[in-house]
Image (cartoon, rainbow, N blue to C red; front, side):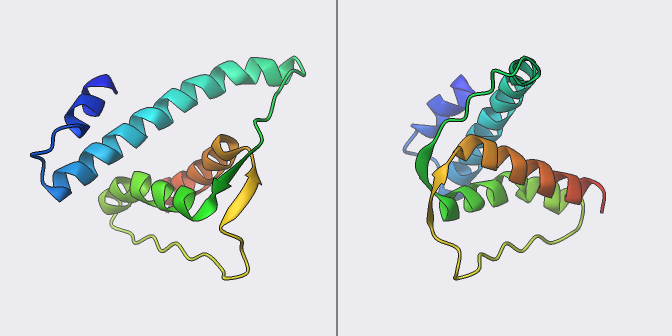
Length: 114
């Protein structure tokens, strides 16, 4: 992750390269969160789970998940379309990382088993 963050600071990258570096960074962050999830399982089993409530942009979260999973999508020769109903508010209060984990797992499994 560290080297990808250094590359991300390079102003000479094309917009496509910047996009790919961003995806690498988000993928690294996702892997780190998976490691943290494994550690968190022990806290859940011990009854010590802590949710981190904050306000976050749901639309931005969905977009980042879509970008994260775009490579899986292209390798599986399927198309992912994300649509957010207009009744869904853009800003929510809750645990953003838990919601991201749920969405990535659901969509990732849908891709894997399609």
